[in-house]
Length: 232
View (tube, rainbow, N blue to C red):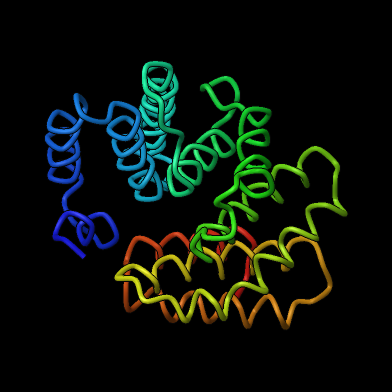
């Protein structure tokens, strides 16, 4: 994993992260406009979890707005190229569109359409990396729960949980960080919406223990989510 990725996952300077992100955007926007916009959107979105304290929320909202703005830039430039979004790009786009409030540019309908297409219609869906598929399933399940499709939400979260062994077997430099994302998302869902608290605790403990080793930002976010629920 390169130094830039380590700064994003760790606790590197936000200023340095964005300076490098903009440098990479300028270098790549002529060759792959959608990809360049999505990468810049991802950099902005990755910093949001640093600003969870109430006095820092304006910074979180600004990064969220910038993430959506760049996603829209990817959609605009996509009309001029023949390739389609990759699975990893769909994961980034749909996460941002699903987590951002509509008044700030979020679009759950667009996210659902992209997720269903990538998960069930794309001819290359079976070659998708397990962690990418799991994260898409989590995003889709989260939207479904919000709109009242609870049975579908449970199905997709269960499918994401079933992919954990496959994620653990991935030979990727960011495997553990991606595993933390899946474990924490599924763990909090089970904690919030089921009586399976022991399972939820098991998943969240695993996620927190792993995050303390690989990403301070992820660990801080998990602790903040636990504190919101008065989990001790």
